[in-house]
Image 1 (cartoon, chains in turn brown, green):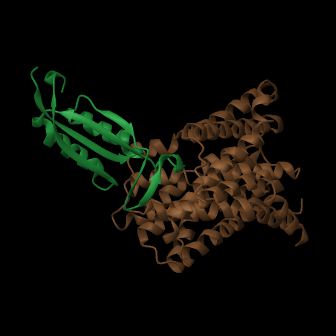
Image 2 (cartoon, one colour; image 1 turned 60 degrees about the vertical axis):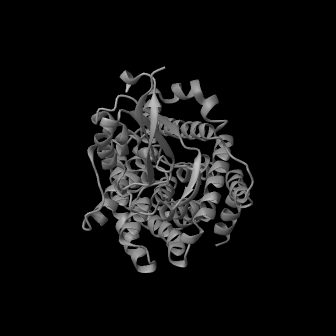
Length: 324
Length: 103
């Protein structure tokens, strides 16, 4: 218990979390602090490029084994199944309509790449190594949840999934850059890393802080706008569902035999909720769903929860049962 | 200078729907239009600012096209297929153009 509290305190006082808190505070205090849209987009591209490339280099250095395929499969299953659990939980503890509950549920099967990046940063600072291919697992978990959400509402005749949307989901810019960088890192290996590490290693933490400042601003303003959504039921869901997801992630990680770091990352992926790919897909396929409900929950509740308390909690849980 | 009557249609729609609206307009024979970013606004879903949207699904764009009056109904039918279920505003106003052969 002492270790968990110490880890949580250490995480809460890390620069990335403190910059996030600064952003939330500035937004709630109505400061005019804003990261320009183009800068935020550029930073996001940098983080995807860096995390993808580093993952690929790690795979190149350590090689691949059977667990890669099994972990990918576990990620896809988690992404597909979690929305059904989330939907049942939401319908039980909240008054949300079937359509809104399905849209929210879809977000909780998909992932938040920023939470994933923050978790890799925590692991790195704790000296815990994870499988490099977890980046590919993150990419594989983006889309299946969207199909689950649409399945959940299909009986009501709602939800529109056409070829253009499937293409947009599978080839959205974030996934293309993440997977592309991963393969380039894999192909070029340590030699490739030596050539660009000045760009993607040393500045990474600082750029991540700036990005989390922006995320804090966006989350804070989203919380102000979405206050009406934050009734007790959805609020409890936003903090309970990540813990349920992380437990399932841990169970899969133990079955597959992932390392401690890999187990934590799979837990974080299962615990996080999307606020980029899935909202866009929901606006196209399920426009009747209220965007302020799912954005407030995923970005305003679950993202801060995972960033501050969730990641150290998942690390403590995994450390307690992993034994290695 | 000779002036010709035309219709100006302005459609504010979610950015994520822009490519679908473009296709619909082109399919309806609209030969030109402009797309402008919307910086922010307020509506039934509350206030929003472009700088505060983290998702591609969050922003809005305005598509403006100027067409001959006889093309209006076909264009509106095609556009409505796209915007029907979505957040947005469609306005139609009279305007005049100098070079009618371009519209």
